[in-house]
Image (cartoon, rainbow, N blue to C red):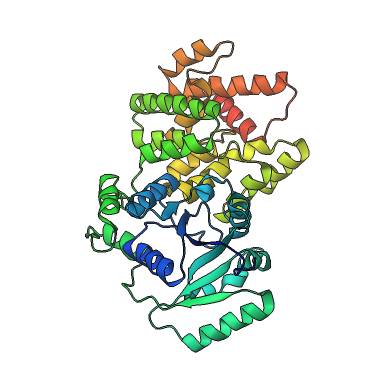
Length: 409
């Protein structure tokens, strides 16, 4: 788009905002004045392709912190499109959506750091992105400005990219600094807006548990799940949570872990095949060749929502606990030598109060007395259903059935 013909100027600030800090706000204020921007969109990323190893706060948490940070700035707007989008977040998709939403009367200015400038042509479909937006690159302390100028000239020659440099001079704050300070028990009120500082403390963000896991914010997780799941799936998730917590209390299983695994067990259920395989690959999880061949041969990729759910739990919800991830992974197929939490989630998923199938009340009664017997009956019911509907049985499920019925007999 020719910026000379555009009537309005829109700044875009993308990033994880984990958390948003005063530096972000001050850069937006600077860019607004220096480049005559009418408004600035803050767009927290959903699942960014370039930051796969970073443990993020939940999308709803990051959105809320952004909304709190921009209060009092009527020209700053928080846009939730990337958090709501399933799958990996790519700038090219966002820019296409923004062009449709705003129309030809707007020229876009993507605000980036100079560190991003040097790798920006690795972005997906960058030549297309370069046609849809100009860039404002904000100098960082210690930058070699001549080298950056040469980089901008190369991008203009190769892609037609239009790069403007901003000489903002303000505090050098990073979200990593903020997270580390909070995790170590320090205060961050000089780095983040007051409302964001209060939110972090109230919701115990970035705190570490004794085993090194991020504190689980079940309210934020529930809000996130409500936004990404269908109403029916979300209702099933809450019922599974309730039963899992009840069984955990009965059998001495950690109730927080049970609640976490139950809430997230179907978080990938409504992904398509490509999305499930993508998120599994992103975290380096391994799905056996036997399972992939089973899915391909029988056209039943839906069974991958267990491992895909565990991968999404790591990326989108910051879960690292191996017991929780195992319970999510195996809640559909099951496997031999399941742990107590595995058994609780597997059976709660099948027996939650919304389920209705012949004999379910007898199984619900049995599981109140003996978890293993309840598990055996649930697995048996699953086998019957697969046979009755002429569906294939995965080797892992069959191995679990054999273990429950024939081991030590």
